[in-house]
Amino acid sequence: MIRTAARFDPLHSPQQMAELIAQISGESAETVRRRLRFECAHPGRSVAQDFARHGGPAYQWGPHLQSFYSQTNAFLYELAVWNRNSVKARMRRWTCRLFRRQGASLDVLSIGDGLGFDCLYFKRKGHRVTYFELPGLCERFARELFSRNGADIPILTDPSAIEPAGYDAITCFDVLEHVPDPAGMVKTLASYLRPGGRLFVSAPFYMVLPWYPTHLRASRRFSGSVKLYEQAGLRLVDGRFDWCPIVLAKPDRDDLPRPKRGALAVRLTSPVLMLGRLGAWPFCPVHLIRRMCNRPF
Image (cartoon, rainbow, N blue to C red; front, side, top):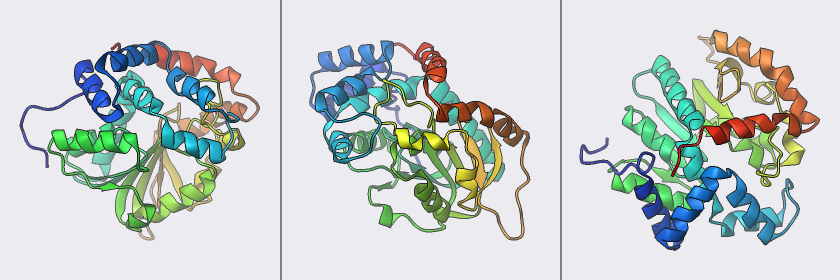
């Protein structure tokens, strides 16, 4: 559990956010504040500009992209702004409300939480949370965030360390559009769930736009696809109409989950998202709406 001492809360303190990014990145506090303000005004531009300097084709998986992930610090800024965004905050709150339908205290695995703010929120709500992220600056940020808050949150960086069938719920927000094999990853995520467990997932496959050069064009074919998850043995049970997120259950032999009204909303909006398989530009308003929902630094 978390100690009751004064919280270190970068989500509500731009000064604390800038301080921790400066510590992790080695950049000056003045540079960090400038870059945070720039990213807030132009979301996604930090990563896009750094990607252009790094070189290599956008929207394609390959050694150039793996190298970029290991070298850039731009995701610190993108994720700092995104986690303060009201859209992301709503996803966090909505997910936690659905956790309560499963039980008062769940074993939760958060895949690709980046800076760790989702894990910290779920922990404060009484759940037993495990953080998984690849080694790097974001993982170092999360370690420091948990430490300063006295949060006992296990940190995993090796997939082989994840316990099969060990979790009541898994969150995977804005990850699948970055991986070369989404179908394979969904099957792996399903293997981590206990029978009756839930996968909460948000994957904007359609956002193959200049602000997101690390989103893979080859995965656009999954935009609006529930079948991607059903092929892994999961069943759609709930979700938001904008798919941020959708909820899928791993059936229990004795208790097949009954879909909620949100599942119907997801299926009704599926044909709209399928337009993303043809091109991303119709979804530019989504990017603009998210920009308007940023909280200033």
